[in-house]
Structure formats: C-alpha cells, structure tokens
Amino acid sequence: MVRLICLFYTGLVLSFAQTPELPPLKSGDLIFQTSRSAQSQALQIVTQSKLSHMGVIFLRDDSLYVLEAVQPVKWTPLQSWIARGVEGRFTIKRLKNADSLLTAGKINQLLSAGQAYLGKNYDPYFEWSDDRIYCSELVWKIYNSVFNLQIGTQQKMAEFDFSHPLVKAKMMERFGDNIPLDEWVITPEAMFQSGLLTQIWSNY
View 1: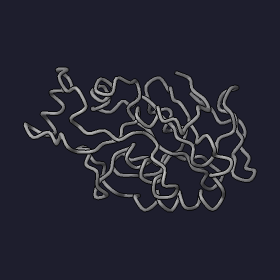
View 2 (view 1 turned 120 degrees about the horizontal axis):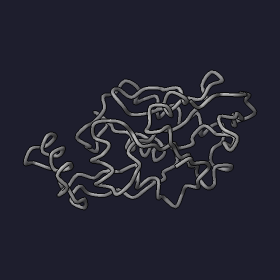
View 3 (view 1 turned 90 degrees about the horizontal axis):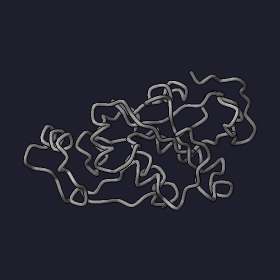
View 4 (view 1 turned 30 degrees about the vertical axis):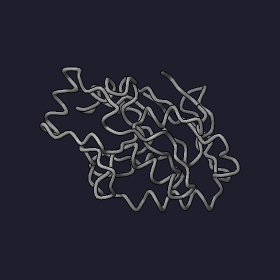
C-alpha cells in the first residue's frame, strides 16, 4: 500500500513522500491510471492505451484529493484513488509552464470550475454536454474554462475502431444500433499525449 510519510505545505506545493521517488505535487496536477471499472478494458482497446481513468489533484485541508468524474463527480483522497487502480499504478503529469500559469489565483479558479461539477452524474454515453460528465471531459473542461487551453485533441466517435468483440458488445449495450459517430470526445490517452504536459512521476 502506498503510505503517506510526511506532509507539509509551502506556497502552492505540497511536499510529501509516498515512495522515495515521488516529487512534490501541485494542485492542478493530472493523474492517470488503469481503472477496474466495467468499461475499462473496452476503453483501453479502443484507445490503444493502458490508461482508462484520470482526475486532477488539489490540496484541500492539508491533504491531497483527486477531483474525479465517477458516479457522481466527487472528491477522493489521493491514496484511495491510487489504491483503486490496477496494481496501484499511476502517472502524474503537469503543465510544462506550471510555474508561471498555476498561480494561487488560477488554482482557485480551477478549483471553483471543478467544484461546479460536484454531484453531477457520470456520463456513460460520452456526450459533450454539462448535464452529465465523464473523467477526461471534466479535467479538459475545467482547464479550458480557466486557461483557454485544449489539453489533448478531441476526436469524433467515428474515428475509433469498435470492431473488437468486447468493444462491440459494450457499444451495443450502451447505444444499440445508434452509435453517435459525430459526437466529439476526449479520452484519457489523448490528454496524456498532449504536448502541453510534462511527466512528473510514473510507476507503470
């Protein structure tokens, strides 16, 4: 189990050790993992990626939490979030120019933008709306609203290959014969590959 060894807050950075290699983290850091959810394997196949879930880290009350879109959108303690993933593996990324962009004021704006989604239902249909929301959509939208940045390239459903039997079964379960091929989506893998981010830590 990942263990929290020391915790202290200086400015916008929380310095702590979960493993000997883990550097100080900042509010606004993006965290990725392989989920154990029912749709995880299908998403991995479609996106050709091991990553199927993500969230954004914030310091709250001297502890680290992940704001994530599950059912419903909620705060999850970082350690609990990590433990929920496959083999406790995760990757953390950060904006390349975080030192200049992630000021106290901007972090508060990110926090406010994210909190506006708290309690919203998870979107299993991956619609580009704010009525319901999925994991990468949540993170993409809060960053876009505050910084006007597009972290990762949106794709249309039509761009994905749904021919794998497992994927085909999941799509039939969700959409029947009416897959919304013109729907814009953003995947964890697309955000992970964004050139706006730099990797801070990974145990994959």
